[in-house]
Image (cartoon, rainbow, N blue to C red; front, side):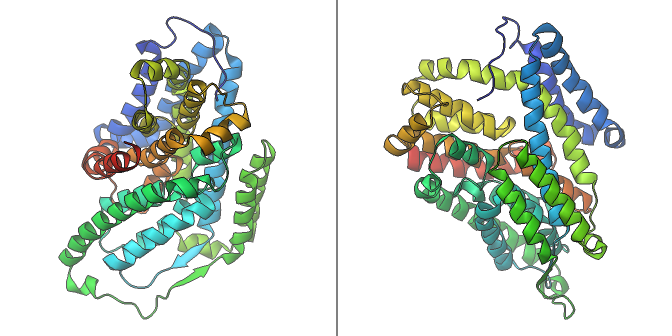
Length: 429
């Protein structure tokens, strides 16, 4: 749980929330309104908006420790993303021919399963480039969106390694296999329905392609993997996740350096590797992490009162956790509502035995919180760490991707949300 901040009547007012709203608005609108200006100046915008919150907390609230906590979370986040980005750039998965809808569905499902072993971030960084190459002759926005839906988010719901919120729950006392035992049914439903929708849309897209593309098979290209030596630094990163800070970050940096030094430059060239995507994510999320501090603090201070006033049941926890996970980091949102549930049960997030008691003897609300954090993380580009990174890599490759609002209004709301509503109704009513 985030450290409590000084109580001030104006702290959570609209004015202090404005930098966060402006940051999201800039990410959503500026690529369309002033594309070239935004490409050149987005680091300045991100730092400028973040500085407003930082200066307020530092000089008006004298809450320097809260800023250090948030910046530590940011640094850990970027080190994880950057290390996996560098490592994945050193692994080249060769693909054969043009992917059929059946091959695409199989790829997404296997990638979602893999996400439970190496995390949604690891699976996303490893598989997004071969996904682009598989569909290079007919790739559209929905290929990127469904990759984010299935591999970057929903797929990682079965183990604590799969998604950051579940890992935080594990660190707080939730048993390791609890997620698999309690979430496999909603996981199977959401995965299955999204896979069917993707297949139907991709089948229509495939049939519209020229026959030369639909029947394209290459005698030169074969399935294969180059850079398998990077599996060792990948294992170091996965092990590092379980270490306390700063050893976690040290191991991840060391693994990234090892991967960079041992990988032949030819593999990076074959992957068209560039640091532009990770630089974009680093700058933009610096502003996001800074400006969302007041929103997270507001959630921490008011979630219990909100829960009491609504008489919240499991379905309420599901939607509140989910909606806030769509626009805030889903990991602290998960912890905030887990803390609320423990408080309503007379327990504390700092007591692992209280977390274990809720997980084993009254798991319904924890199931709702876990489903909301993991599944709704796919509702926007900023809901979960790898989402925006995937978008940046696809954009860097030259393929079209939906904008911030296009992602939400064309895909997340009409396709993903009805599936998540059905899952909540079936498993949490």
